[in-house]
Length: 316
Image (cartoon, rainbow, N blue to C red; front, side, top):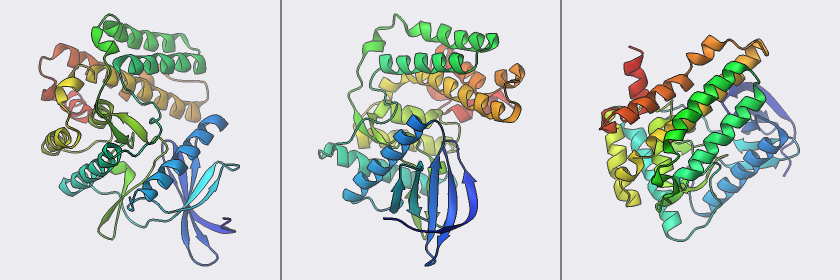
């Protein structure tokens, strides 16, 4: 299908993509999504989002974007525009997240098959390897001595897991995951919660799904809703938080690398190669390292359920 000429009205910027709002000659309003990164990364994200949305539609999931056209040659994908707003992190939004989690898990339990999520983590060893790969990429992309110091801090903490027998433990509970769960990827429209952004969708461990949700820097749910999320997830996935507790510090290290990487990209766009060390050291990446240290020194990690709760107390 070729949608023809589009009149662009505005652009919305995101972390991994930007979305252009356009109008076709017949009045149809469309969302044109352009992915960020090199050719290989753009191709991978576009292909995964296309496959995920097709898969979910075939399985009866309707509160997701309607696909109109895919243009791999241009690195973009076109959806019917969903008019609405990002919902607040409240009880109703949590209900929508839990309902969708239940639907996706039921699809997996009933035998539906899909590829592994991008950066899926089925064991501590896999997550460790992902951290090492990201730090190596960061050092190659930003060849500064102080970047090596940052990576050494991450690797020193990672070394604490080097002889831990849990590294080889395989997580048994699996489910289909958005890999970026939260209200930032929901549009509330006409009394319906519509889920968007599927470029990292796929099969993943429940530990990683829940851990990433607790650690996400944009997770603004309060303590009551987070507790409810954990309690209901326990029932949905027939899973226990106890298994995640030992690996939450490891996931925090991965989020540290992700946060440092995003800050470095933003600063390079602003300042070229003149990257101010102090801004990096005061970024969320450093807070994730502090959160890692806190988890390691605390006997009860439930004292701070989420990274945002920890961040709020540290910055008071």
